[in-house]
Length: 340
Figure 1: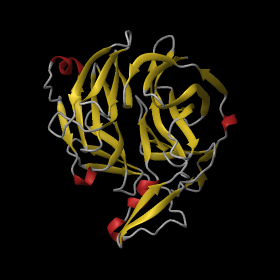
Figure 2: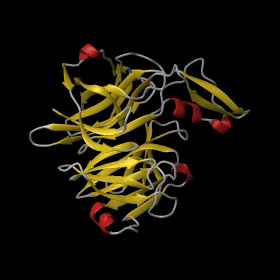
Figure 3: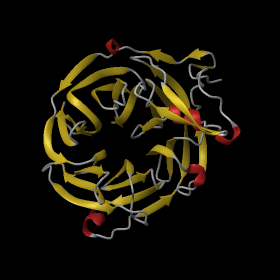
């Protein structure tokens, strides 16, 4: 039995504090000269790929060595090969990656070399999610034909696996339990409340069947190995979701975030050795932070990275000699980088 804290009567929850981390690395960020209304950034081979939510061409491609704009690809729209909002970038290697449009509920596979020379590039492949797989969040690649993702509103499982036809292959885990003061679920809106309250990001180990669920409104991480929940981490601030509710009609209640809502892990990134979590631990709609909490893949706290300014999003680049962190500055939208 899994109740969020025990598996077969074995306690799997580890409570942490900031002092649980072995060391603190203070990183001074430097401006790269790139600026925009960026919401997602990722390293794809020799490019920094940034999604701009205001530009008519959504993806901005910058050279890692020059920091110069190399090109713009994927126009804004609702036609094949177009997107309205790119929430996630999923690298495949050799300049190929998937993008996920959460507004249109679709994925597009992109080859950078082809896209840069073709203004009407349609994408290599496009997946339109069917109704049963819509409202997904934070998809990641399990293999060439299978994806995993959490759900915003449609399901009581923690995350689900689906194929390119949008067929649901497997449902994994369960959402945490409902708090006493929260409204009861009802038949026509059965799982919307819990899924909305406990929305979370999903990250996968690059080479192993380990997935980590990082919650957005409670300081909770869940580690899954081959589809089984192995470990839960709570802390360092120990807060449950603080939200209010608004009745839409007699069969529907919506979840409302307020100035009292605390935020936790709103941006995550991983390498083969570590999971990097941008941790807020603040309220008043503050999803940005100056702090990365770093864990190994066994869920052990490793270190804290402290920036000299708040950031909203980040990505990691590992070389033989160093780790480089690219960030989006909270107040300006400037791209900055820090070296470790």
